[in-house]
Image (cartoon, rainbow, N blue to C red; front, side, top):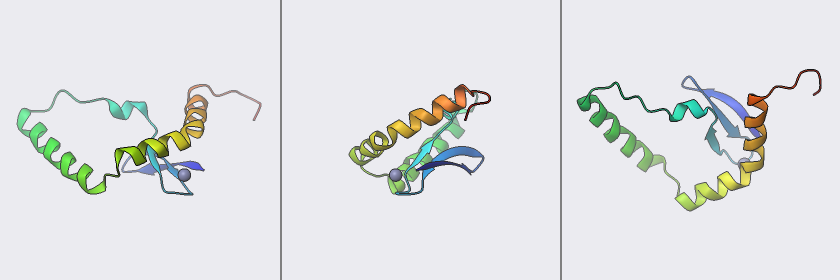
Length: 87
Ligand SMILES: [Zn+2]
């Protein structure tokens, strides 16, 4: 089951069963444009190496996302519309 957890200031969804981690906030996909070119290069290099070391195979990730899709959709719908009263 996916549970929201705060990691380095961001809310992510973590599966208690298999450790699958999904960033929950769609805002986190925003890319900042206001950083200098030099800084941007550094960030790119860092994130590339980071991704490489922690990367699972794309196929595996897709399978995992698919597997959790129902839960992810549910949680996103819940965070957008919060029905009052009923639970
Ligand atoms: Zn899982």
